Length: 243
Image (cartoon, rainbow, N blue to C red):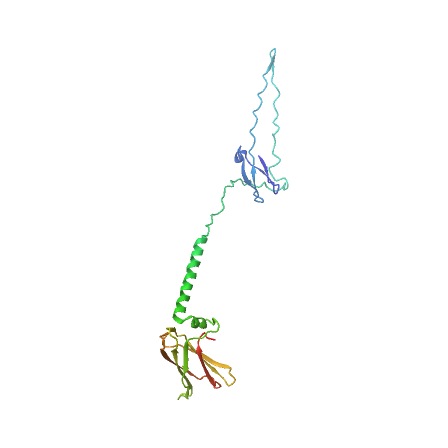
């Protein structure tokens, strides 16, 4: 059987048994194109020779049947390359299946995202409960807006003195009082040093010893720093997160 690739027109000579009567999918060895090749038609039965005609004692046999397919096949080499060897036909079943790919489970990803979000929310609630909302937002650089705390800050005289090693000690002390009738959360205290023009030159945060105060109760705080700017003239105390 002679096969011709419909893509590159290359011809091949293959045995009929390789294709079969039902046909099969084949692939061109030149351009890798695949197509379905019909099977070879069944050969018709050869006609039986006519009986010999007897005339007297002479028997004349019928003339021999000439085979129209006798002789070498003109399609052994490719027609477009007469000097090259005929390519070997690649006949193979096209039954290969694409590789299996596992499908991702979207439910699992959403479950993991929900667990992470829940953990972050629990951590935020714990931080707000421990530090208080104004103090927590103040540490993050955020603020809820202008608020007035029921707690009062009373500062004590500032102490500035030189140490033996040549450094200057700047000591701050004060007292926080709960003037309300309810128990209050005590936020951090922010200390700011400003120059003669009111510009901020230095600041830090003071953590009180108690985090809650009963109605009418108070707590003292103190802090000390070394080598603060020499142009600091005024101390301003406020609660962290309070504008």
